[in-house]
Image 1 (spheres, rainbow, N blue to C red):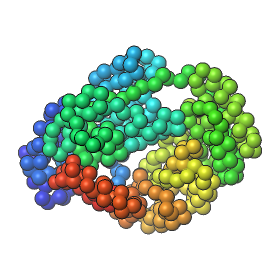
Image 2 (image 1 turned 60 degrees about the horizontal axis):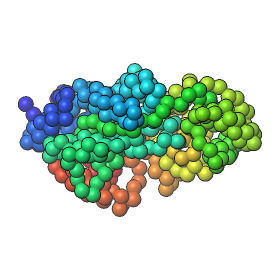
Image 3 (image 1 turned 60 degrees about the vertical axis):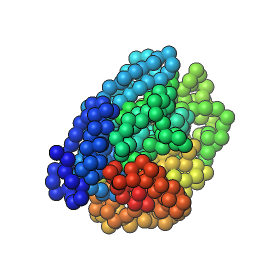
Image 4 (image 1 turned 90 degrees about the vertical axis):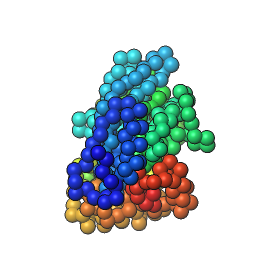
Length: 394
């Protein structure tokens, strides 16, 4: 039986429902609406600790929706249920020398699912060339709070005029409804990729190397920064038809900036870049700034004792703070925000005691918050999905 949502306490065990189709999700959402219950949607569980601590009456797990429904090799598209672990989908695409251009952190055992990645708009180094998560989406099947099954995109059955639903739900953190499946675009898998590494203990030289390469008129797969314990690297991933020629251009730019340069296969380094966007202990904050001011971010990381990785051509960085008492972590987060204001600084991984003491989303424009509030009202006016969780208490 659905429990009334009026108490809003987690003193009782969180009941979990595991549907296997969009129609079953619809039935469960309608039951929750009748009972006035609040719902938390989960996939692999790798990002359930993001955001402020919230309470829910029920968990709707998509672990039973884990199939690759279609892989259209000739069209470079695929249809995935939301609970499919990304690594399993990528293995299937690799059989046809294709890939989905998403490479965020996947968790210790590769638990991250495509639905969770879309809901959190999570990203990895490949964003440099292929763009954000929303650019990989062609369509979605959704279940909003009224329990309807809404299909949008290349398989339109029903749509909501004025909204691009795939992009709207991307990054909504499960606050607007349930993503049941997604239609994605694929790309040919790169052959013979090479990683060019430029090293230095000078943050200015690292930023200069990244800037020189970012302004070269050619395309590489990824351009990342790394900083830890007083030294750092710029990483460039060269692929395509002539990766050796691309690697030579990257090496020349790094040498011009005075960096120590090597070229290697680099698989472990890119795995490190992804893993440093998460933290089991301590805290991780994401900074959205200007690519031209990367030296400022690395300098701040050094000042607060953090390690850092980032998309050097985009200005997005992750600062990982080491384990410390909650008040000390809160102080470091506030120092980062004060130093980088008005850039958005979002708290991702952090102990609950820290997330309870800070605004995890950071200060936002009032107009943006009001727009989000109106969208929330349109899709989930009763506040079924994680009420009060999102930016500005939406």
